[in-house]
Image (tube, rainbow, N blue to C red; front, side):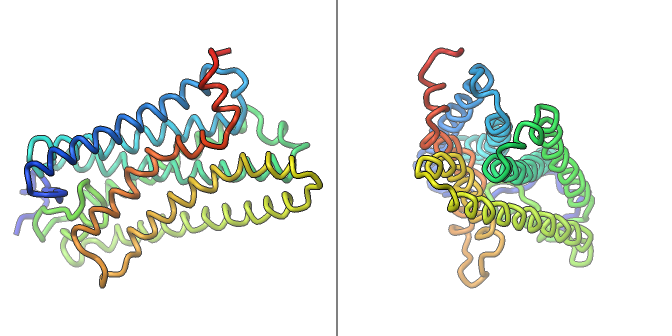
Length: 304
């Protein structure tokens, strides 16, 4: 069997072997990709150019849009190229780059969603201290910490994964390179280091999840104590989009990684991997713009 010194490329799992369906998938992926570029690009432009949106909440939203653009650009263009040219191959170096950027951007996005939960907690539960606790410097430091944590996580996992010898071929059971499926190709005793790193990252991710849940418990308690329905509406209009994005992000990832083997199949695995790697970056702009009046007005009016 080939090992890491002889493997020069990996074979990704195709969505279909029928040429007509491959072209249909290419057109579908292209439409989704262009929609994600347009939606996230509009948010970037609105927040950057509209002075009324120069607040901590929209600063973090701008960072989220950047991460979404990077995340979907890491996986979907290669899938489109493979569907268009009827190929499954990705080079060893290309696979490593794809793994690095996917882990980097997904990790940074999850950290940023945690920071955004803290932003909503301060805004609703401690509004008098909002300006002092979330000044421009503090916001920049928290965003940099989110990006930095994703980068360090990606360096750790990419270096560990691609230092392992491969003893079980080069076929990856996903439409993009992903660490758990590359580990399946490694020698039986060699992958334990990466499993330990994955366990550490999972513990950190669970800690972030607990922080988000506790933050929203406090937020909902504060909202229920508000005397006016107008206060309820304003609080929920800013919190529900973030809560929806977190729910979509976490639920698709949990289903993908914790799906029982009894219901697993190649076709279902492809659909699930598509759901958690492509759908959130494409849908997040829609979620944030649906109930956000300020953002809608900024998209309609000239930049001021």
